[in-house]
Amino acid sequence: MKSAIQIVLALVIVVLGYLIYDSIMEPVHFNREAERREAAIIERLKDIRSIQLAHRTRHGRFLGDLDSLVNFVRFDSIAILRAIGTVPDTLTEAQALRLGIVERDTFWMPAMDTLLVHAAYPLDSLPFVPYSGGQRFSMASSMIERSMVMLPVFEAFAMPEQFLGNLPWRIYYTRKEGLRVGSIMEAKTDGNWE
Image 1 (cartoon, one colour):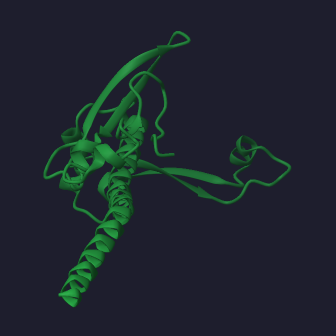
Image 2: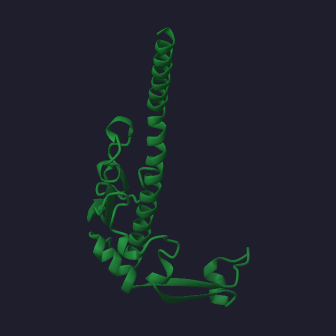
Image 3: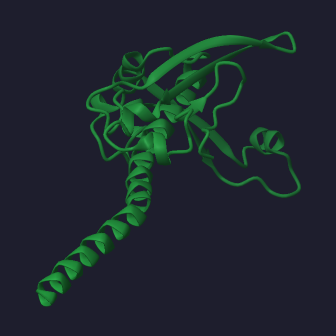
């Protein structure tokens, strides 16, 4: 009888030890998975930003929807400045251009060949938040006035319930405003993870 109680108590100790270990490791596993998911989303948001900046350079404004962003990459082109020669220390660039020491040439390349060449995902999946089950990034663009000058602005973001929905994110996740790039209220294009 005494040995049976000892065996039961040993099993209870093992089970309680496992439960304690599991409760300690749960936030560690959550953080590891959240960082992995955030990295994929940040990559997409950086790509959205680079495409938006290229579109603003080409057309003077930002796009307000993700499908137009994909179409810009697929069908439009980007100006590339080619520089031949180096500017001597004794001259300005304008003087070196006039004297023919350096040459500058602009040519056009398809946006598809210059943007997203490093992307590990197909272009058609750019609008979708990774790990969200097909939900799209929220994006908007506008014009704001600063010092009597109209400036184009954009914002793209994903909320934590989109990419952490199947994890206990309300308990462990501290960035409740989600991941975003740009701002509708300010003329900035940096992300809130930077």
